[in-house]
Length: 106
Image (cartoon, rainbow, N blue to C red; front, side):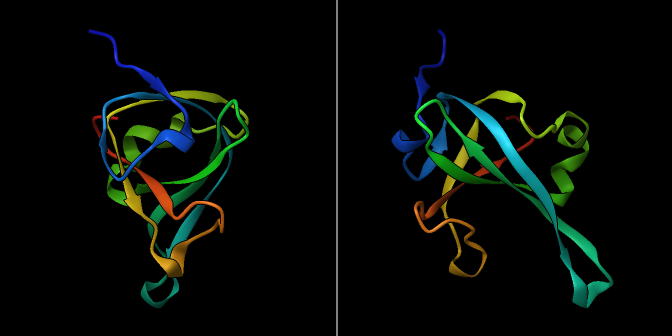
């Protein structure tokens, strides 16, 4: 059975098996300067067809699968991810208080 397609604005907290089609606007590394610049994760800004923007994150231990595939401006169909509340300290956008957490099975 095919996964249903949803918009970023439709996402609710928890596991998501639906497909979201987004464009990767921008991404950058988050590093821990107290640990010699150790890579912690990559933050991304994603936008859908309705111009809804949402933050997404890939943790450092999951990067080997995804790093070479990331290209700003490219379209992606993603599924099998978690939607979680974004920590106040790490929130990039004021519009959405949720973030997409991308895992190996995504």
